[in-house]
Image (tube, rainbow, N blue to C red; front, top):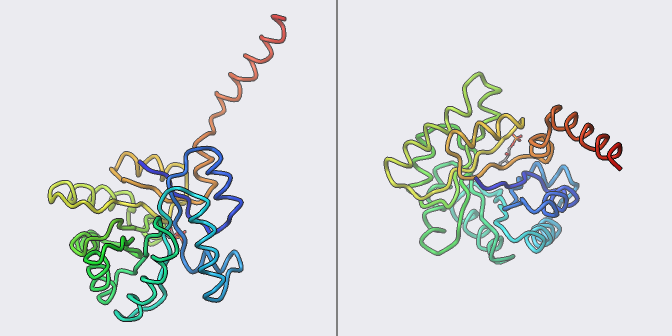
Length: 217
Ligand code: E4P
């Protein structure tokens, strides 16, 4: 399972990149706004900085909701760098635009996916990635991880090549459960990823090894 970081924060992207386990980045308009990145020029520049920094795929989201607007925006975003993935919402015009991008060799990430039916449509349109939002599903009393499992089964049966990118991650446990459920990629904020490191027995064991090593000198 690949690890993407779900942020537009450069320090956090660098931190995970330096650890050597970063496979890509996802952003969205809310994450860009959180970093104070506003205005088309600044947004394009920020995507350029991120996509120069990391080797893997970087999702850049369109904000148009009509076919022509999505295509115009997506073409501009795709030109920033070869590792840019155009992120398109799961709406009717979005599906049409993703098919157009597929036919024109522009890779897409279908975002705002909350059901298996939507994931089937994303695969039919040739999306490179499909992003089910598991945390938001959990928030509304459904089981987000179960959706990942369902999509993974359907994609395996049907032979769809679209990669399942589990998004809206809220905890380290979510990451482990997504790996078990068959996600190809998980995109997470920094904290749940760093949380995977934690175990009290590791800390206790290390403290003992270090104190014994001191005593043995
Ligand atoms: C996915 O690509 C989205 O940017 C993100 O995972 C949404 O997460 P949230 O529900 O925490 O906003």
